[in-house]
Image 1 (cartoon, rainbow, N blue to C red):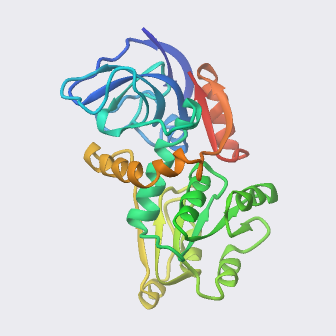
Image 2 (image 1 turned 90 degrees about the horizontal axis):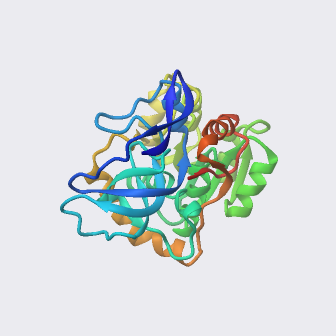
Image 3 (image 1 turned 45 degrees about the vertical axis):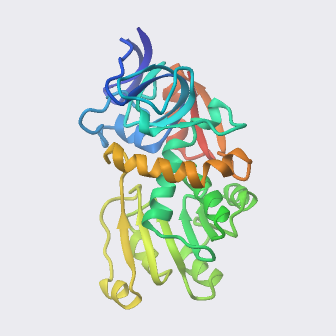
Length: 322
């Protein structure tokens, strides 16, 4: 048996379950640490159910040691130290993962740090670079710059020679993001991000916007986008509906796109894993970029970790230590 955290009536509660057995193409990981993400909170609230076939135990990223392998797995060995993107099941002592989505822990990183990588780095690479097509010398605007996604986006964009503007809700968060490498930080509680982005870019606007807010941010984003810019929507904290001026999109040749990652198949995610291993893992191994860890909670205190996530008082990642 293994300890797990289950969702019961929208509340996280410790429980026990049988240790799962890997099937073809899977690996069983003895979990040392798991990352907390907003989709976990949404799942607890009943707003984001796991995809068909995924564990109902919350948690999308883990780090630990391989203790069992399913048939046809040749890329891993028993005892390998890995981090993995999973569609569920991370809040537990043991977690199944597709072998194709297990990546070696970069040299010099702890299990705690490695647990902060999969969900955020997969998400940022897929949306900022694959979907958003960010290029060197272009300007990326990141809403929620102090979040796990935001701190990852800042570092990756700067590592590939882009300029970064972020929005955040306090001076402390803005200062942290600037110290992390952002070129400019906008306190959205005191400044209009549309006016500031246009001012900072000399009236040109941002080339790529990574938005986790949605709602009334959508039409405002359009007003600070450069010609041929791309808006990538990855979350909807302020709602799913917005009124927009379609003429703005036509005249400025804007691309509006978005994605969710959890429900995509393993082949799609494996492609992201390959690109991360090639382009980003060397940067992690040399220390050029590093995950930002805010707090670490014991597994049985997962509810407190969710409270912190919902407070938005954190900077960077929140981790469960198993």
